[in-house]
Length: 575
Image (cartoon, rainbow, N blue to C red):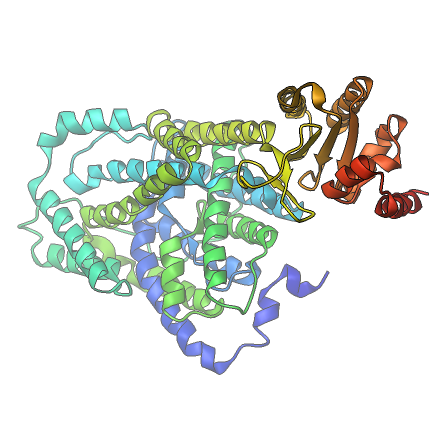
């Protein structure tokens, strides 16, 4: 395996051009101005001291720049993962305590290890079991939960923190009159400024602007705004190297949330990476390499006091739009985080927590995807209800159960759809050799003596009975005049042992009734399985045809010129 495949940085760095440097520098600085205030805010969501948001913004993005297959994805703390961290650890330890911080760092090591192993063993396909409706429903619900949890800082009231919406709403509605007026006004004004600036130009660093305004306001009018909660002291200095506390007794409790973080983080990274991939033609995303890169980012990050990190859609988009073309932008961004940790943390002393809450609330509520729900209502009603079910489950049962219910429902829908695929009778198109769906092509010719049907799926244990039922129904519709059944197998790409046995029984059953059974368009691998399963003990090679029309023509006229050639070809292949 080429070393460049394992370390993509070695692929693009030797080819680096001076013309790319300006865009990378601008992008790196721009992303950092967003990342630093967001990192502080997201650490608060996770129940950690603000400094840990900056720690998580440092090492993980450097490691990803080395090992990631995307050159513009921005790695660091994100709102969704931060809330999941809080939900998973807050039931075990007190938020902000030493044990809580140690568990968050250990969780990063656990998540990274799972991601790395999945990448090494090429298990990226597992994410396919999370369908788009499930992802949309889950992220929309989590966005609402994150937003409501920030009401504590936004209104200056010590509301309960929970990942269940009914608990949040009950407490908010009961105690909303206790809001701190000045804190609330600053939060509302901050939200308006962010929305207005975003409406003017998305490239404007609105988070940085409101952070600076908030700090200046509190510093200049500290006495007037007495009672408004501020961030206060953030320790200076870079994170020291330390092996995370390996508490294997907690693995069992943290594992469900770790897998949730793995799947959600990977989904976010792949979706963002694929989007950016489509915007250029310089590189391709490797899903398994992305898992390895994410895993190493979290593993190395945990040794430098980082909690679980993943990609940010908003920062990745900003990175790309600002001109980033390589991972150098990530190194520039990390460099500015280093400067902040060394010299600028005292600047954030007067930063109002309500400003951070406003940044988070405006950002996450944009993740509530009403547009997708409307689309699915029109396009696919089953997917719509899958989205709604995941959305409601996440809201009312919490993040862990929400994702589990969403995945379970997604698998149920998958099994339902594969167990009841499209089965249709085909008719002959006039003056041609083609057979088409009788329900879509009204002009096709049907013959009461002949049943040509197509089964649009693999034949396996979950749909074998359905195959038999649909065939019986179509045979009954033809009545006593039926003499020939032709299975158009072009859409069948696999058949398991249950499917083979069922097919053998059906062929034998109808042959006993005096009805001939032919197969047309059988793919080579499927034909291999049928032959190994003993189908040739019931019928011979003369029952296999290249196309449905050849089968019907042979039955009707006895013209076996083409059939002999096809049978001879099959015979040679299986000598």
